[in-house]
Length: 264
Image 1: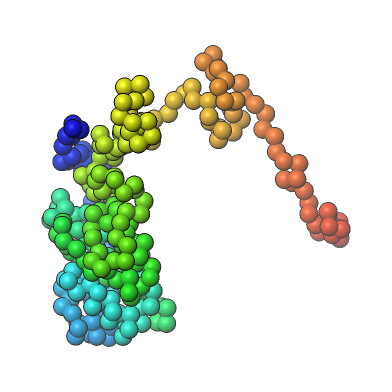
Image 2: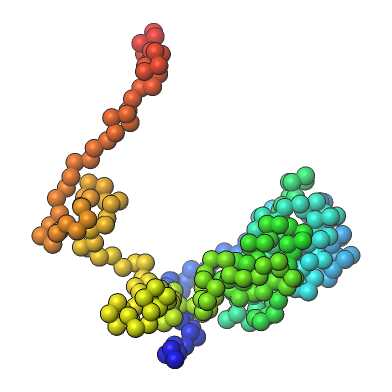
């Protein structure tokens, strides 16, 4: 059995320690200040319960109950002109208030308007799939399940899309370790070589900030490229940068067109 490693508060340490910085809030406007949004909100309010509505940065934000997500989007598409679902995903607010925020970013091409439909949902609950309304939601709902564990009921193919099917945990949860947990550190080794090879190979290094000075695969170090396997323990030699001979070709002159200064 794998050793259990608690994941609670794994990112609790603050990276920024400036206590005096206050993030400015986005100015909020009343929906009545925009005639188009006001009319759309009136139509939507007649069909579903609207918990909050406001305008931020030129777009309307409407919060509804999670049970009404399909009905609300159906109204927005058929009666308010929002023919495009440009983006949808979720935000982890579990530590703050025990909920996820699922959002749908909508675009009205005819009236050139954007709006965001948001809903709060508790962990373990599901939302209704909106694939019958917007085909773009197919992969987005699968990614939301893969990264957050939020299920979309009646989805045509509800399974992971980025991570392997047997992956444990949901990587975009704020309680998920930044470099992965113990399962992640042994996943490739167990999958390719088997658990018996753990001692010989060792766990994976999933720290993206780790830099090995003697790594000889630094092809992007312009002027300091080294051959694979080269010994650089005693120092590195700077190499001259060679540019392509066609890089500075005057194509106008090559095509028989004289440069502007020669035409005077």
